[in-house]
Amino acid sequence: MIKEFLEQTRERVLGGTYRTFYSSPLVVGSASGCTITDVEGAEYLDAYNNVPVIGHSSPEIAEAVNRQLLRANTHTRYLDRPVIDYADQLVSVFPDRLESVVFACSGSEANDLALRVAAHAAGRDGVIVTRHAYHGTTRSVAEISPSLVGLDEIGEHVEAIDVPGWDEPEFDAQFAAAIRQGGIRLERRGHPCGAVVLDSALTSDGIVQPRSLVATVEAIHKLGAMYIADEVQSGFGRTGSAWGFERLHVVPDLVTLGKPMANGMPMSAVIGPRDVFAAFGESQRYFNTFAGTAASAAAAGVVLSALESGALTERARSGGARLTAQLAEIIGESEVPARVRHNGLMLGVDFLDRSESNTARRRASFIVEELYRERVLVSTTGPCANVVKLRPPLTISDEELDSIARGFGVALQRLEIAERSHGE
Ligand SMILES: Cc1ncc(COP(=O)(O)O)c(C=O)c1O
Image 1 (cartoon, protein in one colour):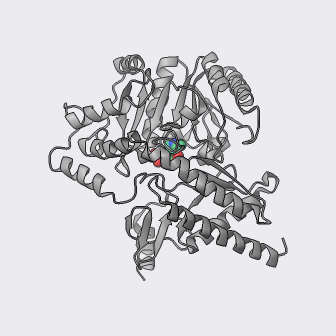
Image 2 (cartoon, protein in one colour):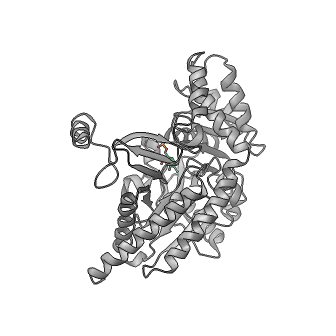
Image 3 (cartoon, rainbow, N blue to C red):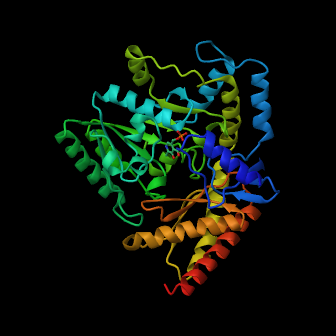
């Protein structure tokens, strides 16, 4: 009843840009820890959401935000201690040259700003991204997001390069070669490369964990471009390290942060060298009204302290290994060809079969719907939505991880039964 009412009202009042998940959308009643409870009291394990990294409705976050809202919540045109203290604490968690921060409110805004800063520093506007990259929704960022707008709609100044196969032993060398070739094509089009933007977990390219990107980053620098690490998905412990780039053995020129940064408060950032921001700031100002408020900084401080304690990275490593092992065992016993990959507690179950991409896509979306019936929330990603993506909060318990695996086992069995009855 309430679902129909909300669906109809939403249809009438919300712009037609939104999509809900599932054939029958979830109606949220409340959320706590790793659980979202619907209005009828059914509990769902949230293995989709990369934002509430320390759990939904965290009392610590609520208290920290509340304290600032009742004290002062202004903007970066005044000096306000919680914001400056947080900035100081944040940059201390990065390698030396990444010493300053500029705040924004969303991952899209952070990437938009990073592109502007890089184009200014490099004096070139060409950008290289991966073929299925997603970096956000502002105009300039949509232009570098082929997975959003399609390859035909990316900018003239943008080259989308292939990511080598996830199991390719020469991954780094091949990726470096693709960067060099992309640079040549951009040069020919009159847009020499000024920036290469890479999601450190290659999330929308199917969740890939290269062993190293050292040669790739050398190739980027040889082009005279800046390496922007988009850590909106991979940051704050998700991969088992504080930042995804650490696992790639490289140091970016600029880093963008978002999603889990303030556990649901709108906060994002670009981290980079002081001289680069100073040069940009001399010619162009950047002020973002809601970015760097005390309330958001307070929430972000709670997340950062959890990161610094080692709790998030430890859980990402041990939880990721536990869930991966269980899913691999389930998949190993199944007739359906699939493979589980993981970057800490970001897991992708790849339904392989690139040649039959529709089969892989159908299988992945079947699993998402069936897991929903099993009260586990996940989604898809990858070149043709062929990968089931799991990203639970980094406070998830072993028992909750085991429930996800159990649900996955049931969903995969139903897929086998459905395919057998359709004679596939
Ligand atoms: C890798 C990556 N970058 C940037 C963004 C954009 O972030 P936001 O939705 O906060 O604008 C996303 C969002 O999904 C993302 O996955």
